[in-house]
Amino acid sequence: MKIDMTRRRSLYGALAGVAAIGAGGTLWRAWSNGVFSVGEGPAYAPWRAWPHAAAEGPPGLVEAGILASNAHNTQPWRFRVSQDTIALHADPARHLGNFDPFRREMQLSLGCVLENIWLAARARGLEVRVETRGGRLAPGDTEAAPVAVIRLTPGERAEIPEYRAIANRRTHRGAYDARAVPAALQEEMQGLAARAPNSGSFRLVLFGAGPEKDRLGELIVTATQAIIGDREMAMDSARWFRFDWRAIQEHRDGVTIDTVGLPPLLTAAAKIIPAPSPEQADRQWLAGTRDVHVATAPLMGLIAVRDLYDRPTALDAGRLWQRLHLWATHRGLAAQPLNQPCEMVDREAVLGAPPRTASALATLTGDEAWRPTFIFRMGYAEQAARLSPRRSPNQVLAG
Image (tube, rainbow, N blue to C red; front, side):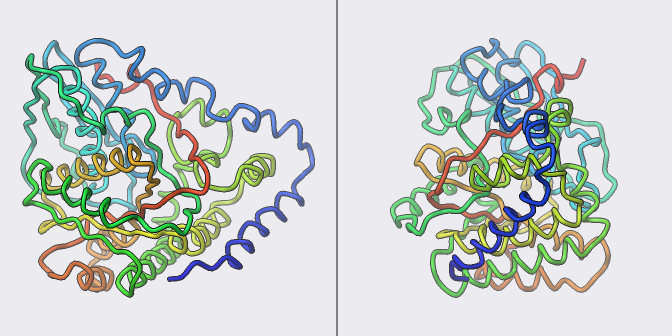
C-alpha cells in the first residue's frame, strides 16, 4: 500500500474542521484538558523517576516493569515482591474483554514487563531465573497463580544497550518518513530474535517494500474495519479511551489524545473540542490506520509462533517485542504494534466463525505451521511521540 499524501491531508483537514466547529469555550477547555501541560502531572511521573529515583532491590525493578509496552495501555499487571523474588500476576480487572477473549494479548503484555525487569536486574548486577506457568490460554481463565516468578541472586553488572532505552521507549502512532530501514538493521533485529530466550518457540518475519508488505497492510485495514463493525469489540475498546485531563490523572492508563500521533496543532485542537463519540473515535482510528499507520510504514514485521495459546510461548513473544522496541528506540527508530488481524483471529475462534483472518495471515509466514501473534511497523518518525500515562508502583504492588 503506497503512501497517499492526499488522503493524509484530507484526514488532518477533517479533524481541523471539527476543531473549528467546536471552538466555543476554547480557553477553558484548553486549560482543563491539558493543552498547556502535556506530559505533566502524577500520571506521567513514573517515566521521569526511572532510573534516577528508583528504589533498591525488587521494588526498583518493578519501576522498570511498569514502563513496558502493553495492549491499549491497560497495564494488566500486579506484583508481589520479597527480598529476592518478584511474582508477576495478571490483573483480571484490566482484561480487554471481547478484544482479547483468550487473554493472549494480556500474556504478551506481561512478557513485555518480564523483559524490562530482566534487563533492569542484569544491569544492576543481579542474576535472574525466570519460572513460568505452563498450560494453555482459554476464555474465562482468571486463575490467581502468578504468570511468572522472577528469582534474583547477586551477580555481575551487564552492559545492555536496550536497558538504557527503557524510559525513552514510546508507542509512535504518527506518520513515519519515507526512509527505508537499512538491511543491516533488519539483520540486527533477526540477531536479537535468534539470541532471545526460548528462541525456537517463535519466528520473526520482516517485510520491506513489496507485495507481501502491501498484503499485510490490507489485512490490518480490513481487520480494523471488522473490529469497529463488531459492537462488542468496539465497546470494550472504547472504555480505554481517555480524552479528559482529569480522567487521565485519575485512571493513569488508556489511550490519550496526546498518544494518537496527530501533529501538535491538531493535538491541541482535538483537546479543545468536545470529546468524540465512540463511533467518531472508531472512524478516526480506521482513517489513521489506513492513511497513516499502514501508508507511511517503510517496514512491517510479525512475530509468529506454533501455538497461539501456549502460555509460556505468549510470554516469550512479548519479551521479544519489548526487546525489539527498546532496540529500535536505541537505534533512533519509531515503532507501533498493529495487532488488529491477530485480534480478529481470536474473535473468529471464540465465535466459531470461519477462520478467514487466520487463513489470510498464514500466507505471510512461509509456513502455515507458524501463526502470527504480534504485528508491528517500524520507521523514522516525522515528529516525537508523547508520553502515555502510567500507574505508580504503589498502585500495582499487592499487599
